[in-house]
Image (cartoon, rainbow, N blue to C red; front, side, top):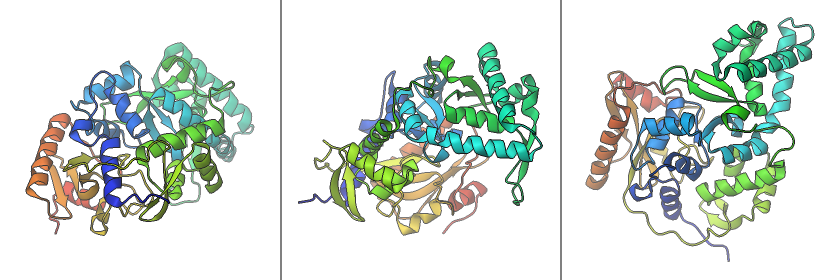
Length: 403
């Protein structure tokens, strides 16, 4: 008989596996990599997310600890992967997601870049792209990490202008180096390193993966074949996000339905029943989960927990939909006992403001106050703007009154 896993049990599993319970927070030298592994990878479309997602799961929250892991120890690294999104994960996981999701992007992105170059007046775009790629690799090998602007100055050909989204209202003319660096990233040849500004900046420097990590991410031979990597990634995701439906895994990875079904079979996923229908658990993870007790978390926009599933009704009440934008991107959220209960944002003066979608108990209010004080200490004098704000977080930042 198929075991049923109810909503409360799913929320308790989330709390422990995502290290959101105080007693489950990571500590010690390997804390940041442990946090990344707990959720497979941290979203990095907004650079703030990486640091604040980690801080919410560290016993001793620290921006410096995240920067040390990213740029000194290099125990986590940025890489484009699932759904073309920028993530931060441990090098071993990055190699898995590169084979399971990123390598499939190279061909389409190469063809798109060639088309854009031809439209921009380059007579032999294939030769131009091959030469530009070689020049970037040579320059990075000689000089080490460089910004896109520095590479543009060092390799004049990269200043070739191309028009992105021609004919669209949002079309823009940019230098070709943006496409060349993106393609090199998808190949696994380059990785993004320390930004030029502070930790809230997305103006990264680029380095060769082979020099930054000691070995290239792509190429042949490669430690992972695609099918092996796909099964591995599905298993890692189920350990962190299961039980969940096949549609959740397909959405999170960006795979097609056939690849998703095969991945579930290859990793030995165990079928259970969840509130939305059939769900899947990682093999060996079928034991019932004990209740987690009272807890509260302040998670940043695009946090991997908030963005972990396509079907969100079991943790996102209808009254809390204002915590997401119209494209389904999560703004900063307040969590209590495994569900979204509010939103938050930082005012320009640094003040942290919250809006609750439901009344909290006195115990949860006290926990929320602790989390707010902890977050304020982590941020210090840093001011940031959420890149994908929700309607509620936008209103909070503006100081508007919410009912």
